[in-house]
Length: 358
Image (cartoon, rainbow, N blue to C red; front, side, top):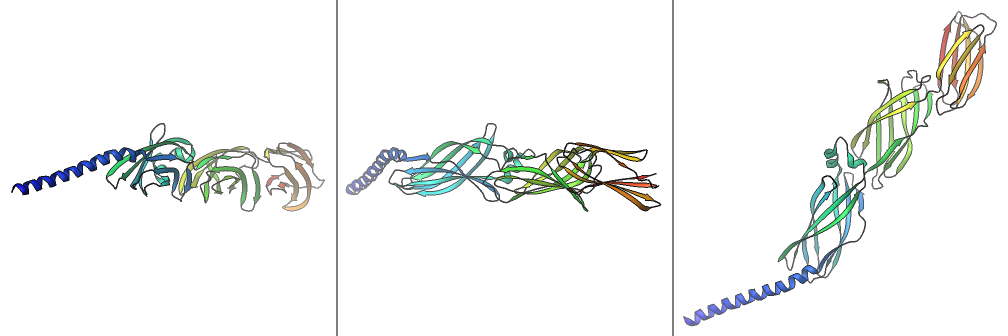
C-alpha cells in the first residue's frame, strides 16, 4: 500500500512539475513572442467602387517575428469624424505563418445605401470631403492557439466624396425647329476617379411657376466632365422678346441614388423688348439682342389686300450679341389692309411674327 501511495504521489509530482515548467516556459516566451508582432503602415489607401460600396483598402504590414503562426486574425474598425461615429464593422483576415511578414489590406466597406439613408436629405458625405479617425483592432491567436490577444492600430483617413462639385455656365446656345426651342447650357461635373458609369439629370423648366419645358443630360463619371445639359421649351411664352428668370427643378441620378437639384437660370432674350409702330408711310421697329448669340436676321414685311399678297419688302441685318437695333421699312405706294412683319434668324432658326390689320 505504501509503495502504491508513493507511486501515486510521484506521478502527481511529475505532473505538477511539467505544468510548472510549461508555465515558466510560457511566461518566458510570451513577452518575446508579443514583441515579435508589429504592425506598420506602408502606403496610402486605395479606393475602389463595386457598384454599391466605396471600398477603402488601407495597406498595412503585419510582422510575425516569432516561431509560431498567428491564427484567426479578425479586424474590427471604427471611423469617427469631428462630430460623430461614421462607420463601424468587423471582418476575418486569415493567418500568418511564423517568421513571415504579410501585407494585408484593411478593407473599409462604405455601403453607399447606408450612408444615403443615414444622411438624407443633406447627403453630406456624397458631396464633401472629410477627415476620419480610424481605429483598427486586430484580434489574433498565437503560441499554438494558447494565447489570444488584441493589438490596436490608429490612423487618419481622408474621405474623398463621389461628387466633388458641379456648376452650370452662362453662355448657352439656342436653336429652334418645328418641335420647339432648344438650349444647350454648359455644365461641369467633377466626380471621383474611382467611379464608373453615367449620371443623369432630368427635370422641368418653369417661368413664373408655369412649366414651359424640360431638361435632361447624360454625364460620364470618374473624371471632370465639361459638357452640356439640354433644355427643350415646348411653349415660347414670350421667351424670344422677354429676358427673365427660369427655374430648373429636377433630380440628379447617380449610383442608383437620386439627389434633388434646383437652379435659377437667367434667360436673356434675342429679341428683348421688341416693339414696333406705324407712322405715316413707314413701319418702325426696335429690339436688343441680350442673348450671348449673334443674329443673322431676315426682316420681311408682307402686304395684303383682301387676304391676297400684293407685295413684300426684305432687309438683312447682322446683329451682334449685346447690341440694339432701331430700324424702319418704308411702305410701297399700293393700297393694302394688312401687313405681316416676320423676323427670322438664319443661324438659330428662331422666328417672330407680328400681324397688323389696317
